[in-house]
Length: 109
Image 1 (cartoon, one colour):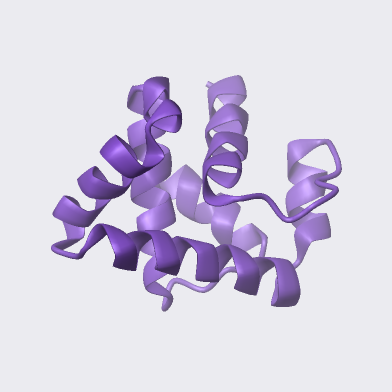
Image 2 (cartoon, helix red, strand yellow):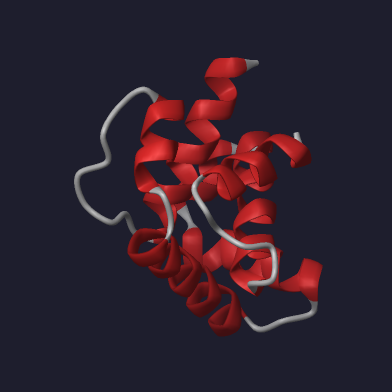
């Protein structure tokens, strides 16, 4: 599943050189295991991702926001939309973006 998450992010134009890329990948994998992570971003998701990378929750949240911003401003959103099969009207927040990725991957399994 890790490769599929990376493929989605790279399809949209996000580079693996951003720490947010790796944090988003881990967050998506956690949400695929347990969707209730989406209900507790600051209390469960960010801390669990931070522990996996020996980072702080603030670093994780900021890096994921930055990665989504880079993707939205410099990436190829239309490629991601073509893959998903629907248009993303506004730049999503971290939880929304992770939900989009996890939802797509669940539908393909």
